[in-house]
Image (cartoon, rainbow, N blue to C red):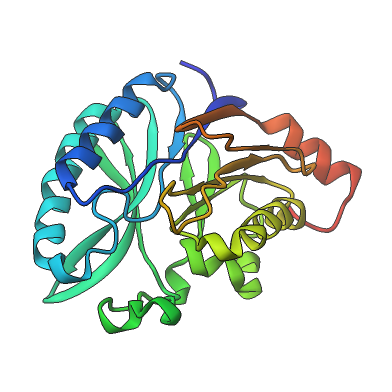
Length: 244
């Protein structure tokens, strides 16, 4: 097992099928191929897609899938989002799973109205977008459209890693690349961006370093690199903009 000084990081870029079980099986298989101590980010609603006409079914599937994923993840950390029903309301919730438990959860606060998300999902509160700690690593999550709001970048200032699970529109692929790279530079942190590989999404998953170095998807379902604490500390000393 590695320490918090360095850890493998993985970004997935997978197709979201209409068959929920097929999506879960593919995600489980990719988890198995990742290093045993990896931090993995999977696309937004990767188990079901938005499935607006199947929300009850999708939410029920989420409950079952969470158990399967939590058992399989082991020492890895898996970050993804899923359709979830609570108090008769549907949310798009980001989960962080580790060692058979939900380590952290965060509902999507900024719904994409052009995709009619506001007609189906209940929005979370923006104040819930906050860092959490995982083995000494400070991690934040921005879910897809939330990436466009600069105030949310500030709420995650000081994070070592920001995960961006997305279903980002193909017509705005350049925006996804530009914004995720800028986020890494502005917050001087690692960004693990994971977009779906669907016909209408960007498929531009990437891993970006605090110095702006980036690895982008080239048709593979999984890309990987390493989180290094010293890289963050080096960047924040080199260009001190007050991030601690």
